[in-house]
Image (cartoon, rainbow over all chains, first blue to last red):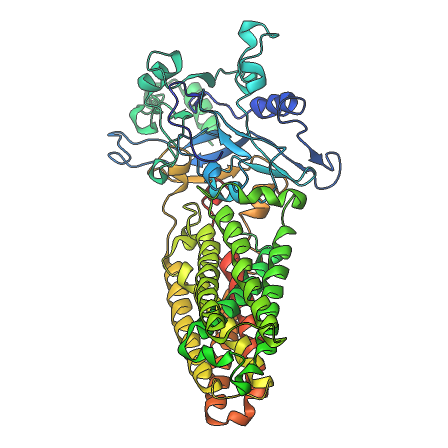
Length: 258
Length: 328
């Protein structure tokens, strides 16, 4: 059913720290590796070794240049310097997922128990309307299989009793070398992820559109702007009174000064 | 947005088909329709043409619906799309499209039965035809409205949320209907219906021109409701792309980031206006002033209107910008 379930108490999701993400694409690669054999398998590529390789990925890591700001703008009293921003983009498992309600077949659904948004690939007709309804670009269509694909929040890992307890988290979270990705229950205000969001001022992407994403992004901590640093001390210019020197040294000074 | 030809064919052809159905429905429900009954010999000769027009409209609708399944990844599962009418405009469109066949096919059967002298009593015939006509008109127009709502309900594509999107879809359907019915009446030795049809065609064409000029002017100055800063969670910051996540195109950049030939938009708009505006209006004036020219002018108007709607629909897709392009 594409009608949304009543809001679940449990809201499983990710918290992504834009301060520590270094844009290494490990999340994207490990996601691809796990999901190529998991619930959403296969995750097909076309011409992977050819001239124009293309394929379905659930994680895309963008890199942006953020311009410097004037003091007093953007809610910061100090000027913020220009910086690089690495931005991993994936499904946000929204509270109000338009991708689910537009689905004509019932293939797209939001789970009542934990809020995870999934596609039942046996029902999907590949009309692509759900991808049109998503502003975050979370859904990618597989030309090879003719159905829509999306992040499953690794439902086949997070509840998987065959895995060590420490491994029961999404592949992207486990792979991140800088621990920029955190997984947990964002519906529970006492959870580690909820506390992290509260402490660091986590934000929703495009909140004005009203999809109420569950995943949160932690903005980069303010960088120091350049002008606060004093100018590096320079060696004082030495003055030499040649009148006090002996004739030989005066001559040496004249020769060397040419 | 990438303009998928199958979707453009579908919305143009089935739109015109539903326009024909809506128009015939109104004509059957109007007070003059009881003349079709068997007792009135001259009008009874219209029964077979009536059945043929309805069948033509159903053929247009069917070809359109079939062509829309070509853009599906799994066409054999298309039947599943009738299930989620509670939330999905696409599903509602499917259900209503199917429902419209019921009164339309019943009308065809009734017309054929009366034509073959199936013993339908004149007054029963008149009431059934009028009722079925109204039902057909309502269902046909609501189906077109649902098609438009599929687009108009997407908050991710601001150009499609414009209030004139639904009126434009309905307008093109009615225009196509008027021009096609007018052509058929003109080819079947005319009659008194031609002059009102020509006036209606001219009026609808002028309204459509006004709607589209207004729509295009609005979307040209419309800014996206969000910035790239909002999209990455840094509202107010000036963010520019440093490196894309992938070296080649992907599904998102092909489907949502369509930019090819946007630069020809201005010329295409002029071409569309000539096709769905100028030519049908001139043809309608010609038919009104010189009824003998109808057999040529009306089909010309119908062809121009359909081509114009096709170009307009292509622009509707190609010029609509999706919010996901903010990330690229």
